[in-house]
Length: 262
Image (cartoon, rainbow, N blue to C red; front, side, top):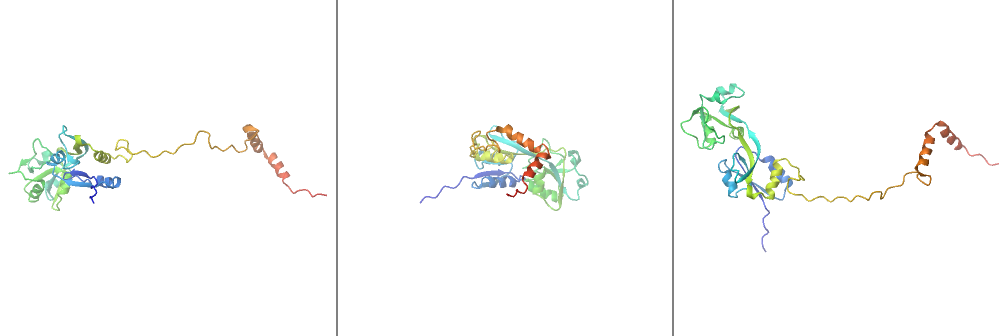
């Protein structure tokens, strides 16, 4: 007895800070028989995972190599500066890069903002990861500018953040290998774009059976009162009834008590 083949699955990679829960829920509602596997990868390794076939598609940070990958931009993230709760920056609702000019701004090796030149004063050495940089901020060694989702991901009670109005932003996109655009990839594209199940741009759906319409004139009931006299006589009779109270009264008189026979 041979084992039955495993059902096909869809593998979705996603980078830290991205929350795919809403799209995953819709996938399970629409395609309950197709498992969706989630794979968290770092921003730096996302392209390699997609290129090597480790995932069918990914929620990644731009840019990607457009000679290899297709990409649909989804949204841009606000950048924030993470600081201790008693830092002077917290006195403002938002700050600029100039406000950070005298601060030691940490620049981790896994930075995703792609600075031309990081703001502020450089630290003695670059932290290996964003998580390491957060620990240094908590130790009052410097501040850190990251996308807001990463500030939330690494939340600590002793830290807070403020938007940086002129910092670079990080763009999130759905990406996949251009030569591997499968039906399941098309299904997920439809989900992230908000298409309905029967959208013509999604995977082709079978057309529902159409009810056959009766032929013109078939099955119609004849008009009430229509007979040999035709419609006009019928109309005239109705008009006569509506013409006044005399006809109605006369009709009522004829419906009185019957006469006794002698």
